[in-house]
Image (cartoon, rainbow, N blue to C red; front, side):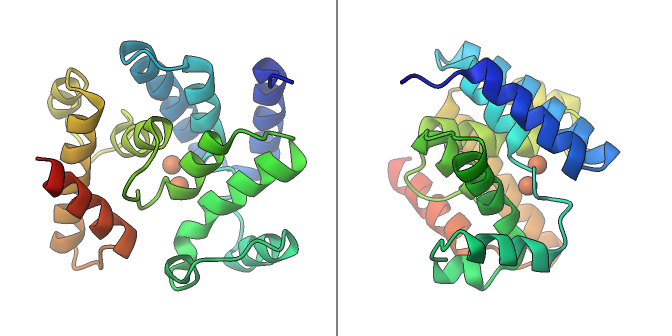
Amino acid sequence: MAMDYTKLKKSVIKKNKKYLKFQRKNHVKRVAKLASQIAITHGMDPQKAEIAGLAHDMARNWPKQKVLRYIESCNFPLSKEEGDNPYMLHGLAAALILRNQLGCKDEKIFEALRYHTTGRAYMSKLAKLLFIADYIEPGRSYISGKWRKKLLNKSLDTMLEKVTKRMIKHQAEKRKATHPWTEELYKEIMRHE
Ligand SMILES: [Fe+2]
Ligand SMILES: [Fe+2]
């Protein structure tokens, strides 16, 4: 049976109300809006993009232990890269809430939520879109309006390339380690250039 996205969206908003702080709620609304705009421009499903945007940070305000316990309770096997970097697990927790509690069987949405923090090589179009929208939404102070506007005129893969490069550069400037999945994504991009 096809997923009822109107119903799913309502359930996601309800969860956000329960779990998210005010600022985070505004962030996910902006991501959802931008994600559906990008979807329309690139011939993708705007409803799915909107849901991914609304749901991606559902567990972002949970304490780390709660996120870990929840994933454990779902018996979901963590990859080494995820186990070593608990910060990114709020994406996987959100994906599991959607699958196990809200009945969303869409693998593309699951993947998009799971990888939204770091990106990953060989992502689906929806996962690429969410990764981009989360990084450049209008509330991000590190992105200028001019840069965003220019970027939004590019193809999905060019946007992905620019965002990935910018993220890695930004992390280097802040002396933060780049996650192995982001490195893999970067390598994939360079192979295709
Ligand atoms: Fe996030
Ligand atoms: Fe986010």
